Length: 304
Image: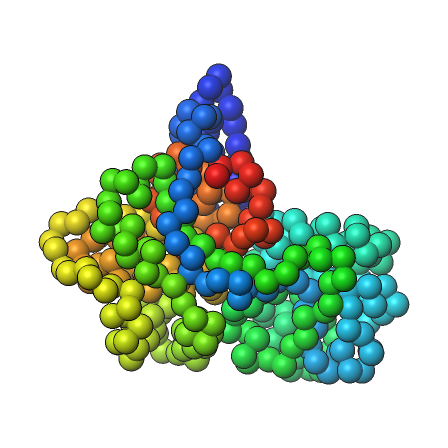
């Protein structure tokens, strides 16, 4: 997955390459600074950083990122990351500099799936591994993991996950704005959702799992849709998302909620840069996966 930014005169063109698919987002450069906050999906409950298995922390007696330098060979001199365009990747590159790891470690970028496969293989064999990870994430409930302390606060403190919209959508659709204001999770609700998706991944898609989870949690659904009734033909909504477990969960749930009250919804998976660009240029209507204030700071500075 790759995103390219081009500028021709006052026109900005974003080319997102997604496997066999190519998305072109075109707009006036000045249009890229007007995205609007719609709500808070999870308040001050999101964490990201470098993570090791608990047995690694115990056996190597490490608790902080600064401890990694003394054990680089135990990790094959690698930090296993996700896609190059992710906010956590930029922060990890900064952490490598701040903690003087550059002489001993290389950040391996790939995808969330590849990172999780490496984590699972290491966990099964009892070998040592350090990965970039965030919470809420189903992996923190499946594996016994330790977030390494970050005294320099490169990864910041607890973050919030917010929903944002393309310019003007909030004023155009007050019903949607109401739903998004009400669309928030408690930490145990979010963790439960992600765990349910993961535990059922062999038998159902994320879309099917989230539909089942909603049906099993009617009180939460009532809170989200309080005061909103079904009305046919409310309009078409495109939700952009990055390929993260938390984004997959929250975006699929929102898709079902909006369809239940009369919207037609499409999910569009992109890398983070293309997602924010598409939102700013009006090609995407909503996102539910803005990590603020730090992880997605570069995109907020550019588009918000």
